[in-house]
Length: 549
Image 1 (cartoon, rainbow, N blue to C red):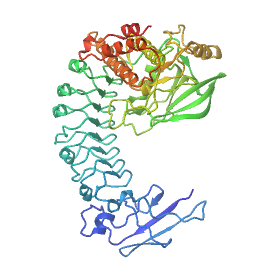
Image 2 (cartoon, rainbow, N blue to C red):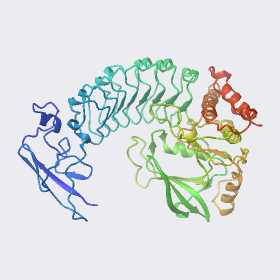
Image 3 (tube, helix red, strand yellow):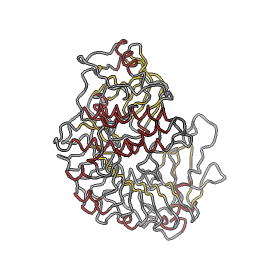
Image 4 (cartoon, helix red, strand yellow):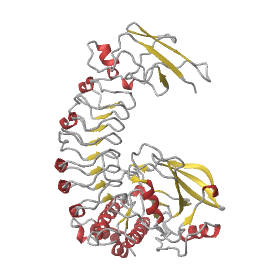
């Protein structure tokens, strides 16, 4: 590893580098400003762009300017001055279909970006952009997260083919004056400063996935009810005093998250929850890492456990503490069991990019589940709201029935406690290749809150040993027991549709093993759970009975 420090001196450079210079070199190269995450620039005020590599290792020539570099650490090798060409538009063919311009240090996007008539995907994330120039009309996907926008630029409204748009973690206070393209199907506005949404949002009738968590919304425009294709809606960590009745009447709405709003009470912790002290944990190897947490193997009082350590108070689904509370409210063999949690200090709940306050720590202790793996993979940009699977993913009839029945029992337990998972997908289900294992029944310990000990940890492991499938990842879960009684049944009917779609996906991947009679209950449950009229869908008690063969 080595570090290279570059000081660029370039008389022709124009401060601000607007991209409207007279010469081609000024327009495309922005007068040779270097940019690289591996370099510490001599001036952070200029918009940085890649420098051209020269044969001399001692200097770069740029219109009469000279770039000097030094400081080679831990290596006698030369520091590569020819940084990533991906930020240099002149390095791309006019027929380019995708541009990756994230982390390029732009304060303004060059107008030359409009000169790519076949461009389908553009990523300008993590720059310092406040506006956008005209963009190619062919664009279908635009990522602009982590910039300095306060409103969505008018240039976006002119994109007739745009399907996916992300302005996550910007500084948005409004959606701008121009209406968004009606072609949109996936809109991400998470982690902004939005207090209200325009009624024109309802014109996006093709919308399937709308992400609005971690804003300051106090109400929702009734026009959202016109989004007849909307299936996934994230509203967690806003300021909604109530949920409008029309929201719960949307027939295709399937995955909803509303935790962290004034209208939703925290999930009550179960009585058997263990008290955890950080000094009792012996942390081991890292098992996995996401954008908001790290999961590590650990030992707790002689037993092997998994520990989920959160990096910050917020994630794209809302407040991480709401996930912890919902997870700790559930105790069932077909749910990945949380043994306890630890919260220290106070996190900053405004802005997901920041960490917690001084001394902040949030973690959960989970059961150790050897032999389990994810049932599926998250949706892709093309599938939008449907999970994806490896081509080789196949299950026998007995396996499918054991998985389906176990998850139905888990969800019956959740909704009996007025809890909605909010993200029922195959990628949030763990399963093991053991068709002989049964679905398991419900369980919940009594007694008061206590310190964990070896016997209780191992008893929990024995209790769930027979489960073939376990529901996990409660990041979108919420407790609806405090909402008006007339609204509560709607949440189970929503989740029933998610269960039905899951069954359809699994049935498509049946390997042919097992009698057709074994699949009949799965098909019956899938058809009932996906009925067009929500009030006609059965609850999970009925669905579990259908699958009890």
